[in-house]
Length: 224
Ligand SMILES: Cc1ncc(CO)c(N)n1
Image (cartoon, rainbow, N blue to C red; front, side, top):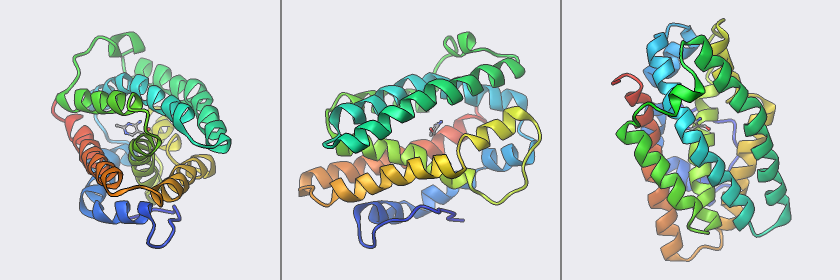
């Protein structure tokens, strides 16, 4: 099932992380939600619930990306993360507005629905990470979210026709998104090479926790 087109340094930190989460990662990218999204058969209520929860998490994801601008040790990645904040503001926010409206919901409603336990754990983990002032920790959490999403977005399945379905897939594949994920992964390899044992263990624990949360986030879409 592993579909990644991302290149990792052999024996580097990113390759080690990716390898340790093989089974959970594969269950996430092969999830029923992904299959039904591509097939265009995902129930409107399931997709609306998923997007409402995801929109709630968008806020924390923006803070996390901003924390990479704050804590990166070089100007090039700071610029890259800054550019990505602009993309989130333009393309991703626009998708949420349109798709939620088409599904009979809205950004305002998304702000009012109760958070699932998984969303709450994810948001809290992202906020804590954003405030930890640790570039590697922020990179790890960004990498799980974006790399795992690229890996399902690049699955070789026929495209659905409804814009609510296709739009969510298109946000998570293509040359620009792949280059963005590659940049995060390259940074993990670069920064990961200099970590001490405690920092490395902390990063690995965070990686494992977020991979599991991604799988649970898909599951939660069906248990509303
Ligand atoms: C739950 C979740 N994980 C990752 C992404 C990718 O940004 C997303 N939009 N939502």
